Image (cartoon, rainbow, N blue to C red; front, side, top):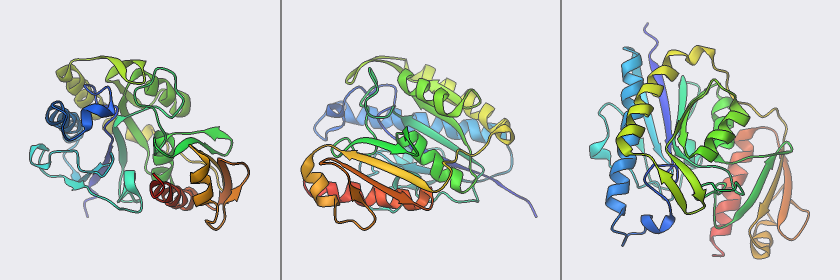
Length: 280
């Protein structure tokens, strides 16, 4: 029986090369249509790289994971994929990941909250989360999502985003991960952007390389139990999340809790973000 090669691509918007602020993503923005098209082409470049590397491709899932998950243009995506879109979903940015997948890509990602000069830095919720620590280490979306995949033994192989994210990736994952710098951060809402075609060519090339060396990569894992610390933006969010079972409120804006694994942590993180949304 043939064992097909399955790939999972998690897409976020802030790390797309042409984007510098959330203002550009508002419905009335004249830039929105172009940004969505260029974002779709960055994902397409990753898909082409995967297909170039192997003939035994099974499933390629693209998980649209920015805001409500309605950003990518499905009719412009490369054929032979499935697109996860919309909300709510239990495992949001990695919805559908499991042990059947062989490789994980992050396209359009961004640095964790508090990173100087990083474009639109935040960690899961720019409106509610101030900081996240897991087992004593500050983490962002890249580390959390990679650890969820790691729970299923799926290794992270490629990340695209700005130069500040690139430094974060090297710190946590070492030199084996393929990294594409899409722009160079100047401030939270300013960057020196690369030409889209140059970005797409590099993503396609490095996606192919990533697939070819996947057997050398190890899944990213936070050793259980997970000791979590989440600091929220304001005290009213602290008030709202305090009754959640298992959470201990240690200050006006900070809660701590322990989970048996990263999956259980992720579900509690989603509960916290969803509850915070109700007090906007």
